[in-house]
Image (cartoon, rainbow, N blue to C red; front, side):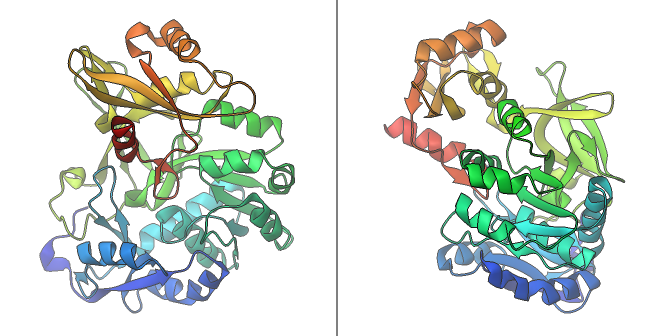
Length: 398
Protein backbone atom coordinates (compact mmCIF):
# COMPACT_ATOMS: atom_id res chain seq x y z
CA UNK A 1 0.00 0.00 0.00
CA UNK A 2 3.02 2.35 0.04
CA UNK A 3 2.62 5.15 -2.49
CA UNK A 4 5.82 5.48 -4.54
CA UNK A 5 7.20 8.99 -4.89
CA UNK A 6 6.68 8.88 -8.65
CA UNK A 7 2.92 8.42 -8.12
CA UNK A 8 2.47 11.40 -5.81
CA UNK A 9 1.10 13.84 -8.34
CA UNK A 10 -2.09 15.62 -9.19
CA UNK A 11 -3.03 16.89 -5.73
CA UNK A 12 -1.27 18.93 -3.11
CA UNK A 13 -1.63 19.18 0.63
CA UNK A 14 -3.55 22.06 2.19
CA UNK A 15 -3.93 22.75 5.90
CA UNK A 16 -7.55 22.64 7.09
CA UNK A 17 -8.03 24.49 10.41
CA UNK A 18 -10.75 22.57 12.22
CA UNK A 19 -12.51 24.21 15.19
CA UNK A 20 -13.54 22.06 18.15
CA UNK A 21 -16.94 23.69 18.14
CA UNK A 22 -20.20 23.72 16.16
CA UNK A 23 -18.47 25.91 13.57
CA UNK A 24 -16.87 22.72 12.20
CA UNK A 25 -20.17 21.99 10.41
CA UNK A 26 -19.17 24.62 7.83
CA UNK A 27 -16.30 22.34 6.72
CA UNK A 28 -18.55 19.51 5.53
CA UNK A 29 -18.68 20.68 1.86
CA UNK A 30 -14.90 20.86 1.68
CA UNK A 31 -14.54 17.42 3.27
CA UNK A 32 -17.09 16.05 0.81
CA UNK A 33 -15.17 17.54 -2.11
CA UNK A 34 -11.91 16.00 -0.90
CA UNK A 35 -13.52 12.57 -0.61
CA UNK A 36 -14.89 12.96 -4.15
CA UNK A 37 -11.42 13.84 -5.46
CA UNK A 38 -11.93 17.57 -5.96
CA UNK A 39 -9.47 20.22 -4.82
CA UNK A 40 -6.60 19.77 -2.41
CA UNK A 41 -5.89 16.92 -0.05
CA UNK A 42 -6.61 18.11 3.48
CA UNK A 43 -4.35 18.20 6.54
CA UNK A 44 -6.64 18.71 9.58
CA UNK A 45 -5.06 21.01 12.17
CA UNK A 46 -6.59 22.46 15.36
CA UNK A 47 -8.01 25.91 14.70
CA UNK A 48 -6.74 28.45 17.20
CA UNK A 49 -3.80 26.34 18.37
CA UNK A 50 -0.87 28.01 16.60
CA UNK A 51 1.79 25.95 18.35
CA UNK A 52 0.25 22.57 17.41
CA UNK A 53 -0.52 23.77 13.90
CA UNK A 54 3.10 24.84 13.46
CA UNK A 55 4.29 21.45 14.73
CA UNK A 56 2.08 19.57 12.29
CA UNK A 57 2.67 21.76 9.25
CA UNK A 58 6.40 21.78 9.98
CA UNK A 59 6.49 18.00 9.71
CA UNK A 60 3.86 17.80 6.93
CA UNK A 61 4.33 20.98 4.85
CA UNK A 62 1.31 22.35 2.97
CA UNK A 63 1.95 22.28 -0.76
CA UNK A 64 3.51 18.81 -0.62
CA UNK A 65 2.41 16.62 -3.55
CA UNK A 66 0.24 13.62 -2.69
CA UNK A 67 -1.22 10.76 -4.67
CA UNK A 68 -4.19 11.53 -6.89
CA UNK A 69 -6.57 9.45 -4.79
CA UNK A 70 -5.52 10.90 -1.42
CA UNK A 71 -8.29 12.94 0.20
CA UNK A 72 -6.76 13.58 3.60
CA UNK A 73 -3.42 13.36 5.37
CA UNK A 74 -3.96 12.75 9.09
CA UNK A 75 -1.07 13.37 11.45
CA UNK A 76 -0.27 10.49 13.77
CA UNK A 77 2.55 10.55 16.28
CA UNK A 78 2.09 7.13 17.87
CA UNK A 79 4.26 7.05 20.98
CA UNK A 80 7.26 8.76 19.37
CA UNK A 81 6.00 12.34 19.38
CA UNK A 82 7.17 12.81 15.77
CA UNK A 83 4.23 13.40 13.41
CA UNK A 84 3.78 11.08 10.46
CA UNK A 85 1.15 11.71 7.80
CA UNK A 86 -1.22 8.82 7.08
CA UNK A 87 -2.37 9.04 3.45
CA UNK A 88 -6.12 8.40 3.47
CA UNK A 89 -7.87 8.03 0.14
CA UNK A 90 -11.45 9.11 -0.42
CA UNK A 91 -12.42 5.51 -1.05
CA UNK A 92 -10.87 4.36 2.24
CA UNK A 93 -12.62 7.06 4.26
CA UNK A 94 -15.96 6.30 2.62
CA UNK A 95 -15.47 2.54 3.09
CA UNK A 96 -14.94 3.03 6.82
CA UNK A 97 -18.04 5.21 7.12
CA UNK A 98 -20.27 2.82 5.17
CA UNK A 99 -19.00 -0.23 7.07
CA UNK A 100 -19.71 1.55 10.37
CA UNK A 101 -23.28 2.34 9.41
CA UNK A 102 -23.78 -1.21 8.15
CA UNK A 103 -22.61 -2.63 11.48
CA UNK A 104 -24.67 -0.22 13.59
CA UNK A 105 -27.96 -0.71 11.76
CA UNK A 106 -27.99 2.04 9.14
CA UNK A 107 -27.12 5.72 8.69
CA UNK A 108 -28.11 8.20 11.37
CA UNK A 109 -27.26 11.53 12.92
CA UNK A 110 -23.98 11.82 14.80
CA UNK A 111 -23.19 13.82 17.92
CA UNK A 112 -19.53 14.84 17.98
CA UNK A 113 -17.93 15.54 21.39
CA UNK A 114 -14.34 14.88 20.18
CA UNK A 115 -11.72 17.28 18.76
CA UNK A 116 -12.42 16.85 15.03
CA UNK A 117 -8.84 17.30 13.81
CA UNK A 118 -8.03 13.83 15.20
CA UNK A 119 -9.11 10.81 13.19
CA UNK A 120 -11.88 9.72 15.58
CA UNK A 121 -13.54 13.12 15.42
CA UNK A 122 -12.86 13.61 11.71
CA UNK A 123 -14.41 10.23 10.92
CA UNK A 124 -17.65 11.42 12.58
CA UNK A 125 -17.68 14.29 10.07
CA UNK A 126 -16.90 11.88 7.24
CA UNK A 127 -19.71 9.54 8.31
CA UNK A 128 -22.09 12.49 8.32
CA UNK A 129 -21.00 13.44 4.79
CA UNK A 130 -21.47 9.87 3.55
CA UNK A 131 -24.87 9.55 5.29
CA UNK A 132 -26.07 12.95 4.10
CA UNK A 133 -26.82 14.12 7.63
CA UNK A 134 -25.63 17.13 9.63
CA UNK A 135 -23.83 16.31 12.88
CA UNK A 136 -24.55 17.98 16.19
CA UNK A 137 -21.23 19.19 17.59
CA UNK A 138 -20.29 19.71 21.23
CA UNK A 139 -17.93 22.62 21.91
CA UNK A 140 -14.81 21.00 23.44
CA UNK A 141 -12.40 23.85 22.72
CA UNK A 142 -11.87 24.21 26.47
CA UNK A 143 -12.31 20.55 27.33
CA UNK A 144 -15.18 18.12 27.67
CA UNK A 145 -18.05 19.06 29.99
CA UNK A 146 -20.93 16.62 30.61
CA UNK A 147 -23.44 19.46 30.73
CA UNK A 148 -22.44 20.50 27.20
CA UNK A 149 -23.11 16.95 26.03
CA UNK A 150 -26.57 17.12 27.59
CA UNK A 151 -27.35 20.40 25.80
CA UNK A 152 -26.15 18.99 22.47
CA UNK A 153 -28.13 15.76 22.88
CA UNK A 154 -31.31 17.83 23.18
CA UNK A 155 -30.65 19.17 19.66
CA UNK A 156 -30.48 15.72 18.08
CA UNK A 157 -33.24 15.15 15.51
CA UNK A 158 -35.52 12.12 15.51
CA UNK A 159 -34.17 8.91 14.03
CA UNK A 160 -31.10 6.80 14.62
CA UNK A 161 -28.56 8.57 16.83
CA UNK A 162 -24.89 7.80 17.34
CA UNK A 163 -21.96 9.33 19.17
CA UNK A 164 -18.30 8.59 19.77
CA UNK A 165 -16.40 9.04 23.04
CA UNK A 166 -13.02 8.26 24.53
CA UNK A 167 -12.95 6.39 27.87
CA UNK A 168 -12.07 9.46 29.96
CA UNK A 169 -15.16 11.24 28.60
CA UNK A 170 -17.33 8.23 29.36
CA UNK A 171 -16.05 8.21 32.95
CA UNK A 172 -17.08 11.86 33.36
CA UNK A 173 -20.45 11.29 31.70
CA UNK A 174 -21.27 8.36 33.98
CA UNK A 175 -20.48 10.54 37.00
CA UNK A 176 -23.17 12.99 35.83
CA UNK A 177 -26.78 11.69 36.07
CA UNK A 178 -28.06 14.07 33.38
CA UNK A 179 -25.31 13.09 30.92
CA UNK A 180 -25.88 9.41 31.64
CA UNK A 181 -29.58 9.85 30.95
CA UNK A 182 -28.84 11.70 27.70
CA UNK A 183 -26.57 8.90 26.49
CA UNK A 184 -29.37 6.35 26.99
CA UNK A 185 -31.06 7.89 23.97
CA UNK A 186 -28.30 6.87 21.54
CA UNK A 187 -28.57 3.73 19.43
CA UNK A 188 -24.79 3.22 19.73
CA UNK A 189 -21.98 4.91 21.65
CA UNK A 190 -18.61 4.16 20.07
CA UNK A 191 -15.81 4.10 22.64
CA UNK A 192 -12.21 4.00 21.50
CA UNK A 193 -9.00 5.97 21.18
CA UNK A 194 -7.61 4.07 24.18
CA UNK A 195 -8.21 0.82 26.01
CA UNK A 196 -11.63 0.77 27.66
CA UNK A 197 -11.50 -0.97 31.06
CA UNK A 198 -13.93 -3.85 31.49
CA UNK A 199 -15.21 -2.24 34.69
CA UNK A 200 -16.12 0.91 32.75
CA UNK A 201 -18.02 -1.16 30.16
CA UNK A 202 -19.89 -2.93 32.97
CA UNK A 203 -20.75 0.38 34.63
CA UNK A 204 -22.10 1.72 31.33
CA UNK A 205 -24.13 -1.44 30.69
CA UNK A 206 -25.61 -1.25 34.18
CA UNK A 207 -26.61 2.35 33.40
CA UNK A 208 -28.45 1.22 30.26
CA UNK A 209 -25.98 2.56 27.67
CA UNK A 210 -25.33 0.81 24.35
CA UNK A 211 -21.54 0.75 24.07
CA UNK A 212 -19.55 -0.44 21.07
CA UNK A 213 -15.83 -0.84 21.78
CA UNK A 214 -13.76 0.18 18.77
CA UNK A 215 -10.20 -0.53 17.73
CA UNK A 216 -8.30 1.21 14.98
CA UNK A 217 -5.96 4.09 14.24
CA UNK A 218 -5.31 6.89 11.78
CA UNK A 219 -3.77 4.35 9.40
CA UNK A 220 -7.13 2.51 9.19
CA UNK A 221 -9.35 5.62 8.94
CA UNK A 222 -10.17 5.21 12.62
CA UNK A 223 -12.01 2.33 14.24
CA UNK A 224 -12.23 -0.74 12.00
CA UNK A 225 -12.82 -3.51 14.56
CA UNK A 226 -15.99 -3.24 16.67
CA UNK A 227 -16.35 -5.32 19.83
CA UNK A 228 -13.49 -7.45 18.54
CA UNK A 229 -15.12 -8.22 15.19
CA UNK A 230 -13.66 -6.62 12.02
CA UNK A 231 -15.96 -4.41 9.96
CA UNK A 232 -17.01 -5.68 6.54
CA UNK A 233 -13.93 -6.09 4.33
CA UNK A 234 -11.43 -5.55 7.16
CA UNK A 235 -8.87 -8.32 7.67
CA UNK A 236 -6.92 -9.19 10.82
CA UNK A 237 -3.96 -11.52 11.26
CA UNK A 238 -1.35 -12.07 13.95
CA UNK A 239 2.39 -12.21 13.53
CA UNK A 240 4.35 -14.25 16.10
CA UNK A 241 6.36 -12.20 18.59
CA UNK A 242 9.43 -13.76 20.26
CA UNK A 243 8.90 -14.08 24.01
CA UNK A 244 5.16 -13.35 23.79
CA UNK A 245 3.65 -16.81 23.70
CA UNK A 246 -0.10 -16.95 23.19
CA UNK A 247 -0.24 -13.49 21.62
CA UNK A 248 0.93 -11.95 18.39
CA UNK A 249 1.52 -8.62 16.70
CA UNK A 250 -1.71 -7.37 15.11
CA UNK A 251 -1.74 -6.69 11.37
CA UNK A 252 -4.73 -5.00 9.70
CA UNK A 253 -5.79 -4.94 6.07
CA UNK A 254 -8.76 -4.13 3.87
CA UNK A 255 -10.37 -1.18 2.07
CA UNK A 256 -9.92 1.20 5.03
CA UNK A 257 -6.13 0.99 4.94
CA UNK A 258 -4.01 4.10 4.40
CA UNK A 259 -1.83 4.30 1.31
CA UNK A 260 1.32 4.70 3.42
CA UNK A 261 2.91 7.77 4.99
CA UNK A 262 3.47 11.07 3.21
CA UNK A 263 6.85 11.67 4.79
CA UNK A 264 8.08 8.06 5.05
CA UNK A 265 7.22 6.15 1.85
CA UNK A 266 9.37 3.17 2.86
CA UNK A 267 8.13 2.86 6.45
CA UNK A 268 8.29 -0.77 7.63
CA UNK A 269 4.73 -0.62 8.99
CA UNK A 270 3.55 -0.81 5.35
CA UNK A 271 6.27 -3.17 4.11
CA UNK A 272 3.85 -6.09 3.68
CA UNK A 273 1.63 -5.04 0.73
CA UNK A 274 -2.01 -4.74 1.74
CA UNK A 275 -1.30 -4.78 5.46
CA UNK A 276 -0.52 -2.33 8.26
CA UNK A 277 1.82 -3.70 10.94
CA UNK A 278 0.67 -2.25 14.27
CA UNK A 279 2.60 -2.09 17.55
CA UNK A 280 -0.27 -3.83 19.34
CA UNK A 281 -0.26 -7.36 20.70
CA UNK A 282 -3.43 -9.39 20.71
CA UNK A 283 -5.19 -12.71 20.48
CA UNK A 284 -7.92 -14.00 18.16
CA UNK A 285 -10.47 -16.47 19.50
CA UNK A 286 -13.33 -17.61 17.24
CA UNK A 287 -12.78 -14.58 15.04
CA UNK A 288 -12.84 -12.10 17.93
CA UNK A 289 -9.77 -9.90 18.38
CA UNK A 290 -8.64 -8.97 21.89
CA UNK A 291 -5.88 -6.39 22.29
CA UNK A 292 -3.59 -7.27 25.19
CA UNK A 293 -1.29 -4.24 25.05
CA UNK A 294 1.31 -2.35 23.08
CA UNK A 295 4.58 -4.05 22.30
CA UNK A 296 6.48 -0.75 22.43
CA UNK A 297 5.21 -0.02 25.96
CA UNK A 298 6.19 -3.34 27.56
CA UNK A 299 8.22 -3.08 30.78
CA UNK A 300 11.20 -5.35 31.40
CA UNK A 301 11.52 -5.82 35.14
CA UNK A 302 13.92 -8.37 36.59
CA UNK A 303 13.92 -10.31 33.33
CA UNK A 304 10.10 -10.45 33.18
CA UNK A 305 8.13 -8.71 30.43
CA UNK A 306 5.18 -6.81 31.92
CA UNK A 307 2.48 -5.43 29.62
CA UNK A 308 1.03 -2.30 31.29
CA UNK A 309 -2.49 -2.77 29.92
CA UNK A 310 -2.72 -6.28 31.35
CA UNK A 311 -1.81 -5.01 34.82
CA UNK A 312 -4.18 -2.05 34.46
CA UNK A 313 -7.06 -4.41 33.66
CA UNK A 314 -6.56 -5.99 37.09
CA UNK A 315 -6.02 -2.71 38.94
CA UNK A 316 -9.16 -1.10 37.50
CA UNK A 317 -11.22 -3.62 39.48
CA UNK A 318 -9.67 -2.63 42.83
CA UNK A 319 -12.08 -0.55 44.95
CA UNK A 320 -11.16 3.12 44.94
CA UNK A 321 -9.46 3.09 41.50
CA UNK A 322 -11.23 5.40 39.05
CA UNK A 323 -8.47 5.39 36.42
CA UNK A 324 -4.89 4.19 36.41
CA UNK A 325 -1.79 3.89 34.25
CA UNK A 326 1.20 1.60 34.69
CA UNK A 327 4.72 2.58 33.59
CA UNK A 328 8.25 1.45 34.24
CA UNK A 329 10.79 3.61 36.06
CA UNK A 330 14.57 3.05 36.02
CA UNK A 331 15.84 0.67 38.68
CA UNK A 332 19.50 -0.25 39.31
CA UNK A 333 18.66 -3.82 40.29
CA UNK A 334 15.63 -4.68 38.14
CA UNK A 335 16.31 -2.55 35.09
CA UNK A 336 12.80 -1.13 35.43
CA UNK A 337 10.38 -1.24 38.31
CA UNK A 338 6.63 -1.36 37.78
CA UNK A 339 4.78 1.64 39.22
CA UNK A 340 1.20 2.87 38.90
CA UNK A 341 -0.41 6.30 38.84
CA UNK A 342 -3.96 6.24 40.21
CA UNK A 343 -6.86 8.63 39.94
CA UNK A 344 -8.94 7.66 42.95
CA UNK A 345 -12.71 7.42 42.86
CA UNK A 346 -15.39 7.79 45.47
CA UNK A 347 -14.65 6.47 48.92
CA UNK A 348 -11.28 5.62 50.45
CA UNK A 349 -8.27 5.69 48.14
CA UNK A 350 -6.66 2.32 47.44
CA UNK A 351 -3.46 1.33 49.19
CA UNK A 352 -0.31 0.02 47.57
CA UNK A 353 -0.83 -3.22 49.46
CA UNK A 354 -4.32 -3.69 47.99
CA UNK A 355 -3.01 -3.05 44.47
CA UNK A 356 -0.05 -5.40 44.86
CA UNK A 357 -2.23 -8.15 46.28
CA UNK A 358 -4.72 -7.94 43.42
CA UNK A 359 -2.01 -8.14 40.75
CA UNK A 360 -0.02 -10.85 42.53
CA UNK A 361 -3.11 -13.05 42.78
CA UNK A 362 -3.81 -12.78 39.04
CA UNK A 363 -0.44 -12.20 37.36
CA UNK A 364 2.24 -13.04 39.91
CA UNK A 365 4.22 -10.92 42.32
CA UNK A 366 6.79 -9.76 39.74
CA UNK A 367 4.09 -7.91 37.81
CA UNK A 368 2.78 -6.13 40.92
CA UNK A 369 3.50 -2.39 41.18
CA UNK A 370 6.29 -1.44 43.56
CA UNK A 371 5.06 2.13 44.05
CA UNK A 372 1.76 3.98 43.80
CA UNK A 373 1.27 7.64 42.97
CA UNK A 374 -2.09 9.35 43.52
CA UNK A 375 -2.68 11.94 40.78
CA UNK A 376 -5.55 14.29 39.95
CA UNK A 377 -5.62 13.21 36.30
CA UNK A 378 -3.59 11.23 33.79
CA UNK A 379 -1.76 13.11 31.03
CA UNK A 380 -3.26 12.39 27.62
CA UNK A 381 -2.08 12.62 24.04
CA UNK A 382 -4.53 12.99 21.22
CA UNK A 383 -8.16 12.70 22.22
CA UNK A 384 -7.85 10.01 24.87
CA UNK A 385 -4.67 7.93 25.01
CA UNK A 386 -2.54 8.02 28.15
CA UNK A 387 0.72 9.87 27.48
CA UNK A 388 3.02 7.39 29.19
CA UNK A 389 6.17 9.23 28.24
CA UNK A 390 4.99 12.41 29.95
CA UNK A 391 3.67 10.44 32.92
CA UNK A 392 6.96 8.60 33.30
CA UNK A 393 8.88 11.89 33.27
CA UNK A 394 6.58 13.38 35.91
CA UNK A 395 6.91 10.38 38.19
CA UNK A 396 10.67 10.30 37.81
CA UNK A 397 10.83 13.99 38.65
CA UNK A 398 8.43 13.63 41.58
